[in-house]
Amino acid sequence: MSLNRGDAGHGREPLGGGLTTGEVARRLGVAPTTVRSWDRRYGLGPTAHTGGRHRRWTAVDVARLERMCALTATGLAPAEAARLALDEVDLEASASRAGSARSAPPVAAPSRAGTGLRLGDARQECKGVARAALRLDASALDELLEAAIDDHGLVAAWSEVIMPTLQAVGRKWESSGERYVEVEHFLSWHVSGVLRRHTPLMAADRPGATTVLACVPAENHTLPLEALAAALAERKLPVRMFGAALPVESLVAAVRRTGPVAVGLWAQSRTTASRPLAQHVAAIEWGVRGARRKPVVMTLGPGWAGQTVPGSPRPPGLAQAVAALESVVLR
Image 1 (cartoon, rainbow, N blue to C red):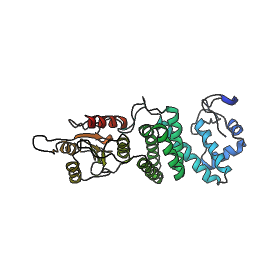
Image 2 (image 1 turned 45 degrees about the vertical axis):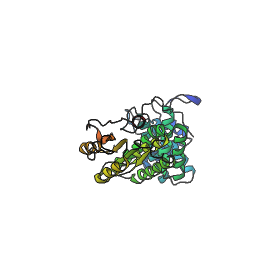
Image 3 (image 1 turned 90 degrees about the vertical axis):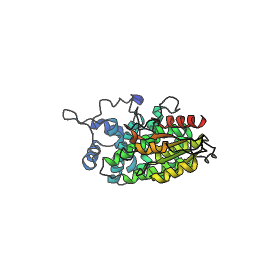
Image 4 (image 1 turned 120 degrees about the vertical axis):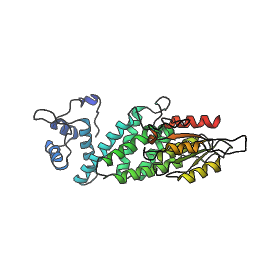
C-alpha cells in the first residue's frame, strides 16, 4: 500500500497537518492497538510532538509503518522489519533532501541547466539507490546505478543521484556511532565499479593533450576523481589516472614522463591540500630548449577551499571541471 503524500488524491486528505493514530490505522488496514504496539515496542511512533493529548503522524512516520507492513508480509520477524523500516525510510528521506539541495561540494554538482535530469527524478532515484545500499543488495544497486547513467548521462547521474546518496549514507553512519560503515563501503565499491564499466577505452595519447589526475599525498577519496576520469574518457580526451595518495616524487615523475597539458589534483580535506605542491607541479617544465612547456594545474575538491593557488583554476563542479579541461586540451 502506498500513500499519496502531497495531495488529496484518491479521496485522501493531505498529511500536512498530520494524522491521528486512528486515521493511520485505517489507512494501513490494521488495528489502532497494532500501531500503538509498534510505537511502544519498536520505536515506530511519530517523530514530532504537538500540544494536547493526541499525537500526529507525518508522511515520513506513515512511510515507516507502510514499510513495516510490507516487510512483515514477506514473513520477516517484526523486530527485524521495524529496524529495516526505520533505517530505509530515514536514509531515503536524507538522500531525497540531498538530491534536491541547491549546493554541493566541488566536483560534485554542475548547474542544473542542461543536466537533462528533473529534480523529481533525482529524488526518486536517490531513494531507490539508498534503499538498495542499506539492504546490501548488490544486483539491485548495480541495476539502479547503471540505469541512472544510461538515462541521464554520467555527469548528471553523478551530480543528481550518486553524490547525494553517498553524502546521505556518510551522514547516516557519522550520526549513528559508525553503525553503517559497511553500507558506505558497499555503495562506494559499486559506484566505482559502475564508473569503470561506463568508462570507454582510454583515448590514445596525443602530444600535449593528456590530462593527469591524482589525489594529493595522504588523500584516499578517489570516487569524484574516478567520475572525472570517466567523463573525460567519454569525451575521447586522453587521461592518465593515478588514484589515491600519490607520493610527491611519483607525481613529479608521472608529470615529467607524460608531459600533460593539465594536471588535476584532488583534495577532500584541507589537511591534505598543499599549495606548495600545486605550485611545484605547475612549475615543472619539459620539452626542447626554447620551447619549454608547463602544465595547467587544476585544484579539485573541497580541501582547496580558501587556498587560492595563482594560475591554478578551481572548477566548482564536475561539469565545470570537464569543460575547463576540454578547453585546455583543445586550446
